Length: 311
Image 1 (tube, rainbow, N blue to C red):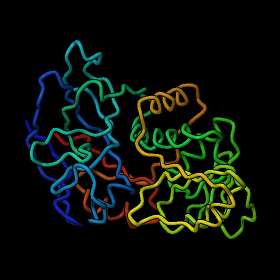
Image 2 (image 1 turned 135 degrees about the vertical axis):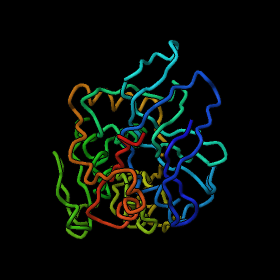
Image 3 (image 1 turned 120 degrees about the vertical axis):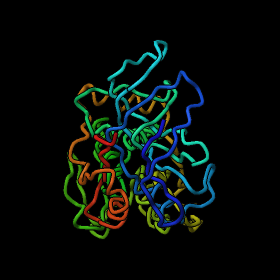
Image 4 (image 1 turned 90 degrees about the vertical axis):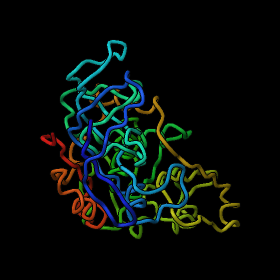
């Protein structure tokens, strides 16, 4: 059985080609993919070759951990039925071609416990669950809700929406005027227009390694900076200022099942919405151009590949 997949063959070398589907366990669920999202964080670094040493790193690789599809085959013990729409946070089913994260393909073989059944009404917006759960993970690890979020990309918007849903009142910094719109229940301002210097919790979603001193300077005493982006350069800060502030530093990494459950609960009760975040959609055959645009076009919030009709 074959699958059509996006394959990053090396830095800035991407192809869409057929790969044999390696099914290691016959009880795995077969999923026909409908949509997959392109991550402008980790996937961009793999694509450009800038990713620091990382477990599982190597080329060629199939990217993608933001995938939605329908169950095409499932055992009775899986708890799933043929036709169920599911979220897939990646797969490892391509043999010698690394599945990092393995979800950008037309067909996947995945253990049942990796899949999450979705409400039909979510449709393509289901690809945003990975980022929403990542945002929830960053918020859940803190003592207080963030009152400053840095970056108004998709992750920053989800952080802000979740903070508002939890009763917070965050401010979001955004340097690019083209990304300043789209706020829902919070304010977006340019950093230079913000005079406040006593934030309790600052969450950085920008991935900018040079910002740490700037953020520490904006903390109140005992405040916390949460690093929710992915950073390619060494992080450093000036100690005396951090010392006087008694600043705390926290790193938020991969989301956990509890984070995904919390996001699904918010979607179910209507306190979180995922609309207005997907800006671009293209057929899977245009993946090479789609990846370039997703990483280079500031107007592209979230690029989605449409795999329907790939078989």
